[in-house]
Figure 1 (tube, helix red, strand yellow):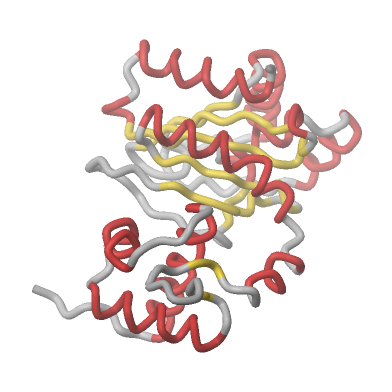
Figure 2 (tube, one colour):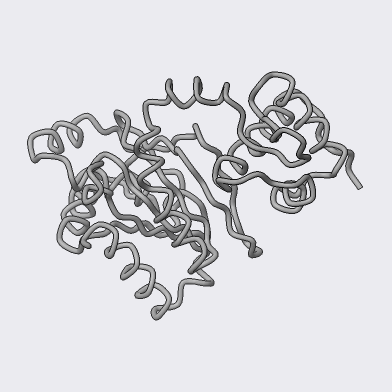
Length: 246
């Protein structure tokens, strides 16, 4: 069995995972609940929580043994330019995840890329991993296409003219003409799609969050093609469109 990853980057990622879980819970959690939810060894969770508590990012109610998000996290939230988007989108992200148990993603269009803000991973086999802060070229993602479809015509045409397409898989869109057709289709249908254009074996369906006041933001469900039967795809599309077209 390989040794646990104790590198600094791994510890930082685990610490932020703990903080995000505490923030999403909205209540004090016991050590056992934290360990079960983030799937960390108990000694690792204890060490990270102790460090975060010492720094003020985690607190414990007076006389209690449970854990809450600490007061210093407010400084981080105040400096997050996407805090409002995350707050508005998270209930929908969580509902989609609970309904379909597939990877659900929240992203924003940033220049020629989509920037991932939040990811809820599936618990099923056949999955791929992304992290907040990762990015992808907008043209080969359903997330990016959904956001582009909401742009004013002049802005979209400028973005298209500046796009340099570099195929990643054999199915990645290869020309601006084909990409233009994908965007027009997304506008017409109210959702965007890509099939194995970013990751072999994975399809993605997405819609924009304009109805929530954030047209630059998009939400998606990524599904291995083996699990995307027509009936399931229809259910996912219906759920996504209920967010963008309430």
